[in-house]
Image (cartoon, rainbow, N blue to C red):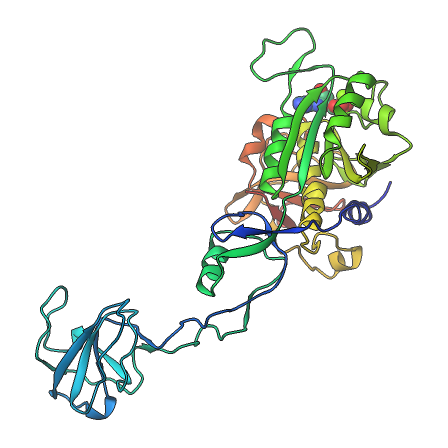
Length: 413
Ligand code: AMP
Ligand code: MG
C-alpha cells in the first residue's frame, strides 16, 4: 500500500508542460498562461475624471464661486480645451483631464442639474473639493511593465478583462491536454438502452469526459469497451493519439481485469491508502508515432472514479498545463496544516459509518457551516446517482473521532 501523496507525486511526474499557442484574448477559457504578461499600457492610461462634473483648478475654488465653462469633454473626446484661471470644463466619467485642471467638482456639488442638460456658460460651485479630488491618475492601478498576469494563471473572464486592459489582443496559453476516456466492462450498455441480465448503463465515460473538460482538458475520444483484450487493445491504440489516456474499471484483482491484462508490464498497478480508490494504475505507454502518453487507470466504481479523477487526473492535467502541482504535498505539509488552495477546513456536522482504516475521501454537502455526506450511506463507492449533490470532497483521516472534528474539504462545484 502506498500513500496518496506518494502516488500523486508519481502521477504528476508523468506530465510535461504542453506548448503554448497564441489565443485571441476573449477565448481560451480554462487554459493556462504560458508566460508572465507585463502591462503594455498604464492603467488608467491617462489622468481621467472619476465623476460627472466640472474639471477645475482647485486654487480657484471657494464656496459660491462662479466659473466660466469653456467646453465639454465627454469620454472618448479627441481633444480638450485648456482650463485657465477662473475657468472650468464640463467633464464626464472616464474622460481625459484637460490641461490646466487638477480636480473635479461633481455635478451634484454645483448649481447645475444632473443628466442631459445643455452646456451652461457658467457654473456655481456649492461645495469645494480638495486638490486632486475625483481624478484617477495615470498608472495608479498599473504602471507600464508591471507583471499583471503571472505564468501559470488559469484563463477566465477576469484574466481576459485584465489582459485586454493592459494592451493584449492575443495571449500565449498552453494548449489543452488532449484526453482519451475509455470505460471498460462487459456489463456496460449505452445510456437509455433497456438493460438485459447483469447489464448497467455506462456512466463513467460521461462523468470522466465532463471532468476532463472541467479540469481544462479536451476530450479526444470517449468510449465504453468490453472486457475482451483484443477489443480493449484496439481502442487503446486509437486512444494513444491523445496526451493522456484515462480508463475506468479493470484494474483490481478480479478474474477479468482487462486493463491489467493488456497493459501489465508497461504500467504500474498499485494499492493506494485511500477509500474509495484503492486500486490504481499509472505509467507511460508508447504511441505508434513514438510519443510517450501518460496513462491513468482508475477503478470502475463511479464514486471511486470521481474521487480518483479529482485526486489524480486533475493534478495531472494541471501539470500538463504548466500549473505547479499544489496538490502534491507531502505528509509534513499535511501535519503542519498547509492546505490546497481550493480546500477549506470545515467541521464534520454529521458522523458516518467508517468502513475502513484507510483515509476516506467522501463526497459531501455543505450544511450549516459544516459538512455531511451527500449520500446517506456515506462513502459507498457505487452511489453515482447522488454524486451530483456533492459540494466537495472531504478528506477524512483514518482516525476521525466524530462530529465536530475539522477536516479538509476540496471544493468540487
Ligand atoms: P471494476 O473496477 O471493473 O471491477 O468495476 C467495479 C464496479 O464498477 C462494478 O460494479 C462495475 O459494474 C462498475 N462500473 C465499472 N465501469 C462502469 C461504468 N463505466 N459505468 C458505471 N459503472 C461502472
Ligand atoms: Mg470491470
